[in-house]
Image 1 (cartoon, helix red, strand yellow):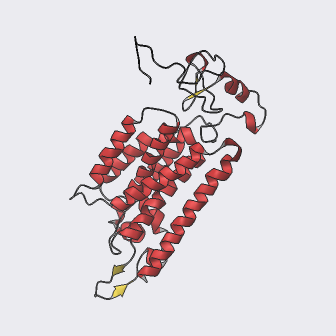
Image 2 (cartoon, helix red, strand yellow; image 1 turned 135 degrees about the horizontal axis):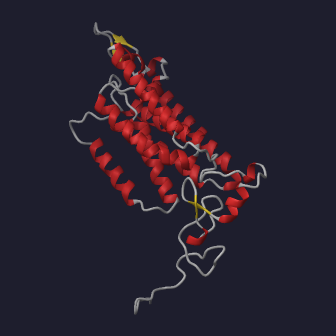
Image 3 (tube, helix red, strand yellow; image 1 turned 90 degrees about the horizontal axis):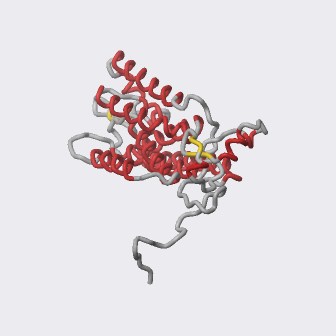
Length: 295
C-alpha cells in the first residue's frame, strides 16, 4: 500500500536525462527521442533537440546528419509555405465562384447524382465518373463567412503542423483529409445533395494536431476543447453542415498523422507512405461500392 506523507511521493517516476541521469524529465529530443533536461534542451521548429543531434546536424555527414522534423521531413526556413499556397488556392476559387455566378459550384461541387429538370433521371457527378469532384469540392466556397472560418482555422492549424511534419507530409495530410471527408459524404449523404467546402480537410488538421500533441506530450486540453466545440457546432440543427465531411476528414487525418509521428525510425518511409497508400485504396474501394449501389 502506497501513500504520501510529508509532501514526499514515489521517486523516479520520470526518466533521467541521458546526459544528466540524476535529473528527471518529461521532455524528449524530437529526433532521437532520448530524455533531456532543461540544460540540454535546444529549441527546434517543433519541440526540442538534444546537443548531440544538433551537433550531428551541422557536420554535413549525408542524409543521416540532416536535421529532420518529428515525422522525418526536411527542416525548412519557411514553415508556412504550403499553408499559404492552400489558402491562396481556396481564396482564388472563391473569387472565381463569385465571378461565374456559382457555375463552378455546379461543375466542381461534391454530388453523387441529380434528377433532371424535366423529371427524368440524370446521372451527374461522382456516380457518372466525375471522381475529381471528391477533391475539387474541398476548395470551393460560396459564402464569405464559410471561407472566412475555414481559412482562419487553416492559418491557425497549418503552420505548426507543416513545421512538425514537413512540407510533403503536410500536403498529403491535407489532401487525404479532404478526400476522406468527401468519400464519407458520398457514402452517407443524400445522393442529390450538393456539398462543398474545406471543412473535411480542416477537421483532418484538427485530428492530426491532437495526435501530434499527444506524441509530444503537450497539454491536450486546448485542442480537445476546440475540437469539442467544433463537433458540437457540426451537429447543431439549422446550420446545414455536412457532418459527414467533418467526421470523414477527422478520422482520415488522425489515422495518417498517427502513422506519420509513430512510425519506427528504421522503417519510417515504408510505414508512412504505405499507410497513405492503404488509405487511398480504402477510399477508392468505398467509392466503387457506393457507385455500384447507386447504379
